[in-house]
Length: 359
Ligand SMILES: NC(=O)c1ccc[n+]([C@@H]2O[C@H](COP(=O)([O-])OP(=O)(O)OC[C@H]3O[C@@H](n4cnc5c(N)ncnc54)[C@H](OP(=O)(O)O)[C@@H]3O)[C@@H](O)[C@H]2O)c1
Image (tube, rainbow, N blue to C red):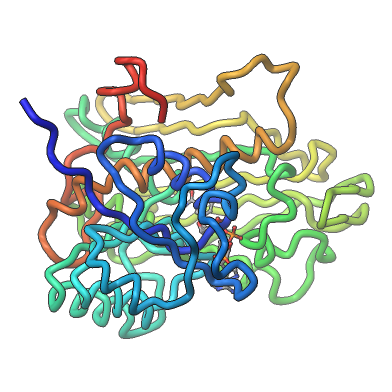
């Protein structure tokens, strides 16, 4: 039996998540890197793998010429910029390239008015599919949906992400949370809601996967203050200011908050009020029976060798790999915006890593 030809992919931007997706693309026999887009002008012309801080060059140089990349007719673009650009995404989709993304997109409900429709139209015009995931929002909601599969009755699903995020303190996507703002700062909760609005997509995606209609999606925000000064790289936080966040995005059906995406992110354990974290993901289904699903992650290296960068890397792996592992299903999917409701469950590359290959 011969293996199908590798799918030809373009890596779009070269940041934290790209480091993990590109590493896998280069290792996997079913994917071939044909191009790389760099957003930063000073990265243009440099080797894509070196930009992603991998050890060996890959021979593909980054460009900012989007048209030239699309002229390569890639099967799929792995789109991982800091923020999605609807115009840019539409152009990619209209060219016929499928897109998988970690960049603040799952269903498009949280984008500005008209954007979701524009992306759907562009995808249909190009005969291409657009899929977004990540760990949370993203894969965590798939876990939530799967956990209901043993139930006779489902009354409520709560998904907890409970993490000390100090290893990610300097990441740009942390800016909008307002770490270090005074407690009771007017407008802080509204700013957090705006910066985390992609979690509304997570609620919509879970609803679509379960086949339910939502009346409303709401957000609840709670804060805790650090009792000590925190000297975090790139983000010092003064004692008495915000360093703990409880963020809930909930889906409402018949007046009840039945889908609950609960994120607890802390920069320290010295918080007032206390916000204990459990370092992982937990799904709780209230139903018949009640179901608890604990999803724990451990590094595959001795713990005494673990650096902050290694810890950060695990977060980026579990963000990028749900996106990358979906590529072949998204290429095969119907045109338009697709979610976990529309594709087979993406699995990891066991087929060749069990046989001794690296990924
Ligand atoms: N759902 C999840 O579980 C999850 C978790 C973590 C992150 N994410 C999301 O994944 C995406 C990538 O995260 P990341 O940590 O990899 O981001 P990042 O490293 O901070 O930025 C990614 C790349 O975006 C480009 N970029 C920088 N500023 C930009 C701007 N203002 N507008 C557009 N592009 C810009 C740069 O590309 P070049 O390097 O090419 O110059 C940068 O390297 C973000 O949208 C983030 O929110 C999702």
